Length: 189
Image 1 (cartoon, one colour):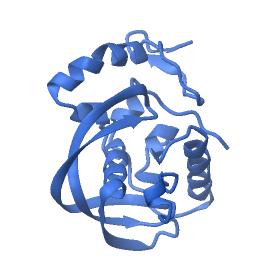
Image 2: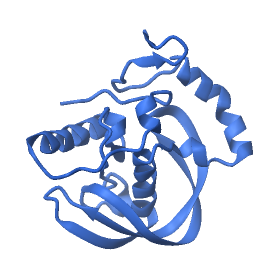
Image 3: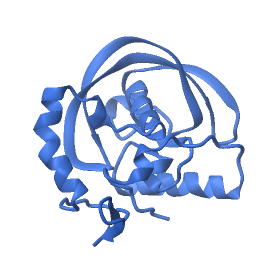
Image 4: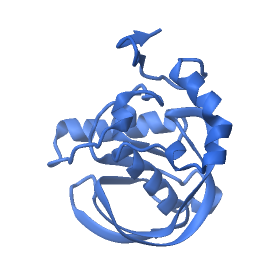
């Protein structure tokens, strides 16, 4: 099932997501729906808060990129970055911030502890695009967006676009959750 994606001004994107206690039918359905939603959008990563669930869960699949075609789709539950090294700047975008891109500096390599879709615990090192996407999605679990990591000058360049998104003036080729007006506490239609 395709889920509506939460957009920039939605308060769920600013909350610390809660730990997943185990795997049950509802978590398995959420994972399947998140993959369906991510592929339909299309995207390469999706965190549960973007799908309207404040849980520490993310999915990703970067195999659509030629140099990563051998990488299998991945589920990370309750991910924790244990260490990082090096830094790399790269342009990022986000399904929750449609039409906005900007250069973000992130660690080039991370050591990550997480549980997979069977709730088996893993500790692995990731680098390159996998490390980038994992960090981007983990930010969502911590209530952060990539635009929060932009340098001040870069942020000023996209602020008008962010204001327009918050006001409901944007286009997306995928279903989005109704926007909530912070001032009035009502849905923007």
